[in-house]
Every structure is written in structure tokens, then in C-alpha cells.
Image (cartoon, rainbow, N blue to C red):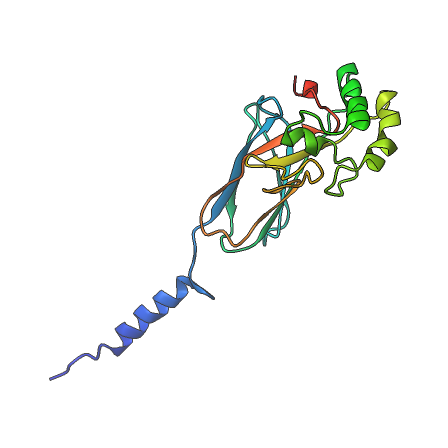
Length: 200
């Protein structure tokens, strides 16, 4: 009587199992990175450029829609990602901004909120130094220079008037080995735009 041996069938099953696995175990589902970017006054920011790097497929870019929303899909999970945000509108500061800048130089940080403090970090040093503001303010007062935009996570807080970097991330956002979809909501501020008029 012939009895078939189960070994070939078992080995075929093991081969199929390993074929469905990556080098570190079963393949993980792809993830996405998404979020909404609002301006300082709460209005959605359209046309903001989002750049994600450290994906095996290279650098991936997208822009926010009319609602300030962006999403980048089909990213490999369990990798570290760096996210950069860019926006330039060419607008100039208005008269009220210029007066508020003069007051800050004269009297210091009076009645400014955390995001306004971030607007004063002109040299990106993480401090609000009058020296840096003096270096920029002449052109700003003459209204000849369009200042850049900066972006912070929606949970941004400045620990003190002289430390605008605060908690949360600003400008460059790092996502460490995500296993599932990531949402990063941000707020955009224009340097020196203390009254938020550039959001209009």
C-alpha cells in the first residue's frame, strides 16, 4: 500500500509563507501622512508645498488644497520621514505690522501670543534677539522685503518671550518609524506679520 508523504505539501506551505514576508517579517501595510494647514487667523492655506523625504521611491511632494488639506499616500511604514513645508506669497508687511515691530523694539514683547513670538525669530536662532530684528527691520519699515513663512504644529507653545521655538515642531517635521497613518496639523505664520493681515 502506498502512503503519500506530507513533507512536500508542508514545504510548499512554508515557501508560500516566506514569500509573503519581508526581511523583517510579514509585509506591513503602507501608510499615509496628511494634515491641514491653517493661517495664523484660522483661514485655510492653499498652495503650500509639502516635501517628504527618506522614502525608498525618493522625494515626494504635494500641495495643500483650498481647504488647506494635504495627503501623501502609499508610504513605506516603519521608516523615518522628514517633512519640509514651503510657502512664498511675495506680500509685504502693512503699516500696522511696522508700528507693532517698532513697539517691540522699543518696549519688548508686550501682549504678544506664542505665534507672534515665532514671527519675531527673524534669524531662525530660536531666540527673539533685538539684534536680529534691528538687522531686518530697516528694510521691513521701508516695505521693500517680503518676509518668509514659517510653520508650527497646531500644539505649538512658546515657553518664554525669548524662546519662540517652544514645544512642538517648527519648520522641519520628523516622523519616526510610523506603523500607521500620521496626521500633522500645522499653523502658518509670516515673519513680522504681527496683525495676521497676510492671511486675508
